[in-house]
Length: 586
Image (cartoon, rainbow, N blue to C red; front, side, top):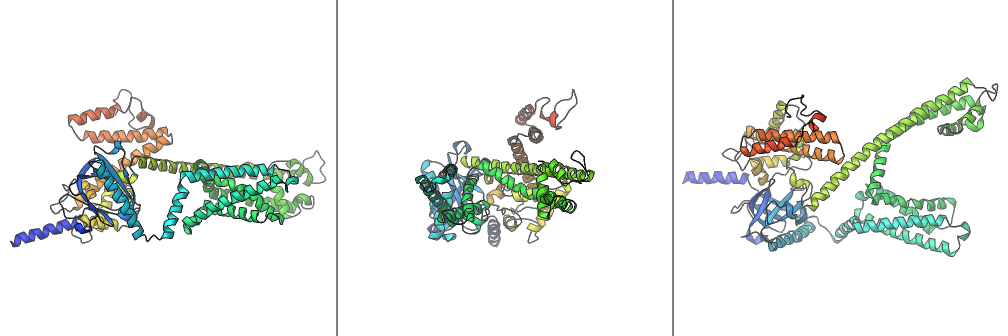
């Protein structure tokens, strides 16, 4: 009997290391799967039965018949709950997906469940969405004011709102152009009154838009955006100019600046926004080259003032006049007349003053032919790089939208260990990788017991704040990584050797996915050589994996993999798998 009690205590201790506590009592469960068959997608296509229960604040996940919680989703961190596309359910009858927020308890991961019929799907999704909204208000302490702010932010993001105000900006620009074509003698006429009314209407509309934006994003989120600051300046100028229709000249100048409303259209259209953002990103680097050009121009202005002030006060009488003349010479317009105006009087109209000619020719060669071209070259180079970054981000956003339409996300296909694997991927050789994994094991093994339990591994990874997002390891992840516990010892823990083997397998899958992403990105940018290189890496990796097995099925797959690499194809072009004449294609 004593031995039996001791074994039960050891089993309870083992289970406590593999769980997040016990299931809540039925009185605290708002809904549970009960007798319904609910499965959870574990890995790529492994549907495993699960018991799920929903409380006021959590969606609890457990194994059927177990009393322990294997995973849980805080409902206040649920960002979306929707049905998966029919082609992506992987044999399940009906599947729905639950998205979680980035940086939260579940690290932005995605949970996919399958149910047996439409009624179960409607019941679960409705319950999750409803209770998540209630839980969000409770845990985020959303007051009525904050809830209204969130509604305002969502309104500004709608396509209808963007299209409407883009149209207003274009129409306002057309009205401004029409107003400039009206004669000044009609300023007191009925036409002028109509333009004034239009000005009030558009100013009111843009003021309302700005007020909603200020209200929804006050304070730091609003002013962190340079576009918002530009909107604020333009609208403030518009309000001031319509309120003071008369007055001094500077008010007329402010009224003229209202035409810059059209620039706000750049924010609405992604293509224009990409160009402007890339240009602004390139300006800081261009500034260095422009400073060099300005300093050299200052030097020539000082030299010109000292040499030619007495000969031509109109061109070099003072420093600011000389600097203006130097910038005028950089346009290479009429520079010969300037030379004749300042050359030595002893030289006739057809003669050449060597000293004056040297000054002007060196100025044009150094400043215009060299430094101005350097400024342009730096601008074009950095503008091109910035455009590529913007295009890359656009591709990432489009891919995220496409995955969202399919009911998927990056979080659903990546490993929870992605931040850690990104760090490990910088190893130099096998010994370096083993050293990195060994040091990681020592850090995670807090009790210095020589093994890692699930709780030690999960808690240790979560505490590593230098990883973004925070690593959240669930029991299902641990179950998959350890091949349903077959890679663990008798107590369900990992030895250093087992931990090293598991991390190497995870790193191998991670690098394969990176190659696939790089291949797709190279295709999107029409980089033929890069596409061939990464395509060749994918095929070589597939063939290496297939060679590990000698079964007839994998032999057929190996033949199919070889068929993907045509004779004289990508391998020959980029140097991957290059061969001599008469040798078999690798």
